[in-house]
Length: 133
Picture (cartoon, rainbow, N blue to C red):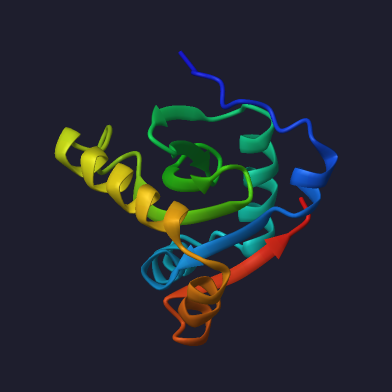
């Protein structure tokens, strides 16, 4: 059963949303033939509550006709970061210790300043794929 993500109803918040993917996620998405356009559409669905809320700013979203699962980290509905991708056929779910790690990573991203995000983009640790969903 899906746990709903709080719906983003504030137009200003939605307009300022930025979506990123990690360098690792980018490589895996390319292998799975998942496009940036698909990722942006999926984030819009997450914003509308169509994702599993794993707690602590971590969400699981189904992609690629339900063949893949993505782990998305959120910063107060402003930054959305695709962090992990796996094929449903390879594993059912992430392990509890992995979830703990993703929650910690979500907190780290939540504390990141705008200048730190710019540095991550410059260093290509993060790639911006869309904004203003």
